Amino acid sequence: MNITYQLSQDEYLHAVNLHHKKGTRLIRLAIYIALATIIVIVGTDFSNTREIITNVIAAFFSISFYILFVRMLSVYQAKSVYQKSAILPYEVTLHISAKGIKFDKNNSKASIPWNVFIKCKNDEDFYLLYTNPRRFNVIPTRAMSETQKKEFDAYLEKYIP
Image (cartoon, helix red, strand yellow):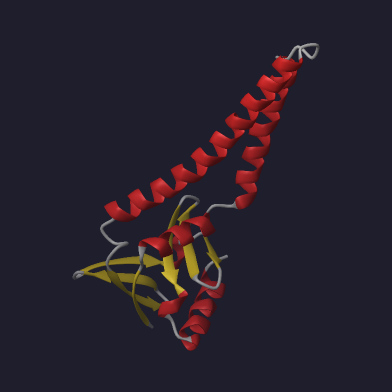
């Protein structure tokens, strides 16, 4: 089975969002909010209303900045990786077989056997094939026909735990 595609920067950002687990982000955010709340409670003289308001506003802006910073940083990192990549912005042909996945780009062939992949995550737009917890390969489903999707799903079921 051969699949040829070119991944756009927006598609790559969408795939990176699929990669990031929202649960871990929420846990980190909850920990940050809890720490900010504890600092406000411990550092506030509750007999002084002005100090209470000042500390609550400072905590609010601190949390808002953290949320904004984390979102901006992840988008910036994804754009940077896409632009510096020797593979992502260009057309790629994948040869998928029982041996694994062979990447054919500009006459340089790289092959990844199925046993290298540790897990797969997918949605209606992408398949993410992980070689380690932070490194993954993106395959858009738009590049596959329905029969190719079924065949690819069968390979994933058979070779990736």
